[in-house]
Image 1 (tube, helix red, strand yellow):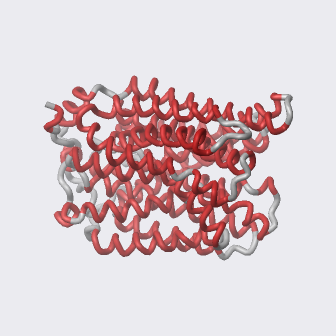
Image 2 (cartoon, helix red, strand yellow):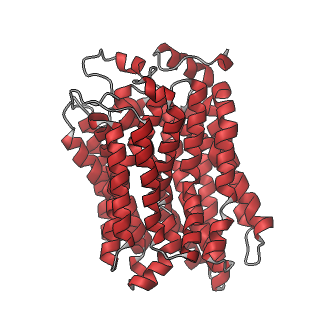
Image 3 (cartoon, rainbow, N blue to C red):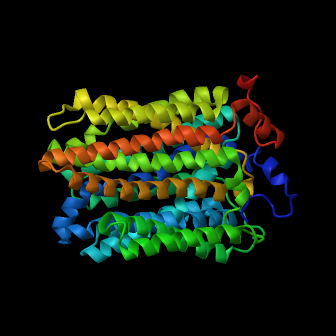
Length: 504
């Protein structure tokens, strides 16, 4: 293992105590610079899920591919990224998170250049898949480095507030940046721009992250890797197939069924191997399980909102790509406000149970405000309030849930726990996009009115389903996560974090 993991000869319980102490003084000295570097890298990964959406029409006109092929530009990325995240997290634990972080950044930038230079549809899809592979190496290492760098409760809340703001607003930022680049340059710059993020990230990592040294490494869980990778590919591909071919399609049914079986087999394998890819103790914890469910359900709601609101602005209100991108700006700003100004102040005092529950209800209210949209809506009077309220709720949920999902984790499990966070977010987003797209199509077909009203009805049904997913966050995660006093006593008992003064 690298020096940023716990040594293999420590007692089983000692790994949890190790999480309270940074491995290197340099990490503590430069921890806010490390946060900036990690934030830049995370932004590149998150916004890449949506930045291409705005560029798709221009790319299609340039490369000449059909309408039914467009989804693969998005699906190739999410398929590779979502299915390999757990492997990427464990590789970071084994070979050093800094090493995987830098390799992921360089590879992500290289794949982006290949995509920008693509001369046909096949090359672009292959480049997007390669982006997903390197993103799966990068994202878990970034979050794991953040987890092991910030251990003081107040500093940790601030750091995860910033990280949560980036993770939550990255999709909206992608729409905004994609609109600007498509309007003033070409669609290819929606890919080339990743080179800028990667260059800053690599230089920052070399300057501020501590040097990793190699040590003993346990064996990699090959059977677990194969079963979970194939299982997640089946699930993500199955939902993507349902979006275009329907739920009764043989390929859809086969992929979803095989995916579920393989994920179940993965759980059995992980309970029996000596060096599991994902130690089950990570997801059995009530607080962490509740936080992961919140992250997954928020992914369902958020990706659906961005997709259908983009369609509504472009097709119903006839906004340009630049106007559409700028229209989303209030949401990332409100997410950042909640995640960096509200959450760090309240999380150490009232805990994640209250913040996630309140945030999910606020976000659900914001999404329901989108039901006020019609064919003649004004952005300032209708869209703006919904974006602000939704963003405030999302900011509370995401920063609190990410903090909770990575708290109390042994240093040697930090990569696997971080990969779980990214996996739930990505798989939730993939499921949400496909599920809400199918619901939208069915609602439009069943409406029976004129086409414009039918499409608007479909948007409203999709928004209502997104709000339902957020209500489920309040119900399920709010029920699972322990009360603040109980949670703090448990974390203090294992030596993971000191009880903050505010708790007394």
